[in-house]
Image 1 (cartoon, rainbow, N blue to C red):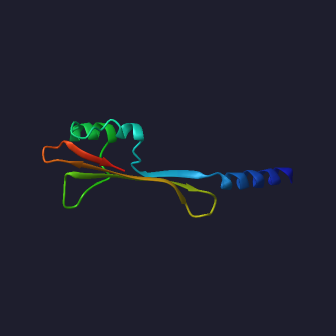
Image 2 (tube, rainbow, N blue to C red; image 1 turned 135 degrees about the vertical axis):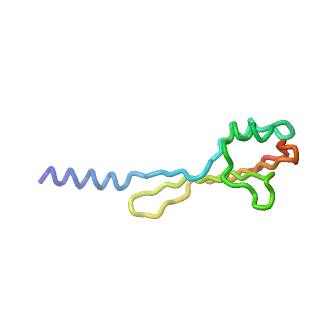
Amino acid sequence: MKTLTALFAIAFLAACTPMQATRGNIVEDYRMAEIVPGVSSRTNVLQSLGSPTTVAPFDDNVWYYIGQKTEKRGIFDPKVVDKKVVVVAFNEEGVVQTVDK
């Protein structure tokens, strides 16, 4: 009987342990600081931030980095605990014009 009670207690505690998931690309602030408007190129952005999540449909010079972190407890729906959208715009020569959160 004690073994069965211990198993239920372990299962109950495991169900309450939060499970985290990251989707997309959450760009850290220190990586964004590496990108300097007027100086950094597309290659620099790819090296610092990785591939963009998406590119603007009508303008290849605008890249989006979109990401979110969720946390789920037990049977409840996941809750968004962090989200970030970073937009990098380039000029026609491929040099960064702006970086916006």
